[in-house]
Image (cartoon, rainbow, N blue to C red; front, side, top):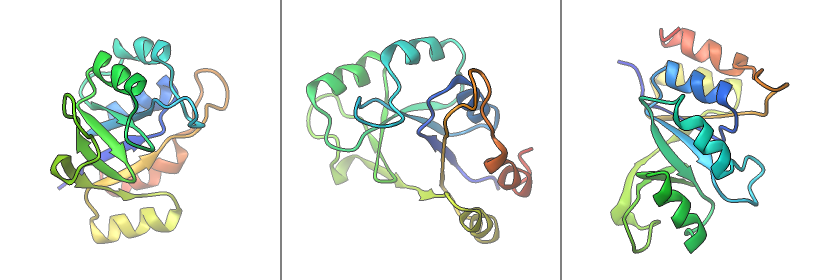
Length: 153
C-alpha cells in the first residue's frame, strides 16, 4: 500500500507538477507574505491550469487573518496545513480547531527520516519543496530514493 503523500513549501511549477505526477494527496502553498516560500496569488493563478488531481492546501503559520481567508476562499482551498497537521477549512469561524483536524503528518526532512519512513511504512508523510536552481529547473533528487523505495517511480 502506498502512503498518502503531501508536499508543502512548493513555490515553483516544476516541483508542483512533480508532486501531482507521484499522485500526492495534497500540495501545500505558503500564502502568508512573511513566509520565505510565499507564493503570490498571481503565481497560484498560473499554477491552476497545470495542476490537477491533488488537493490544494493553504500552508499557514497562525490562525488566518481576513486577507488570508480571502485568498483561501478565492482559490477554493479546502484544507489548511499548520504545524504538520491538516485541517478542513470551514467557511467562517476558527480554522485551527480540533473539530476541523483531519490528520497529522510525519515530516520527512533528512535522509534518516526517509529511511525510517520506508522501513516503518509511515503514513501519511509530508515532503518539503526547495528553491528552483534556475527558472524552470528544480532538483527532485532529495525525494527520488524515497519514491523508488516505495515503488512509485
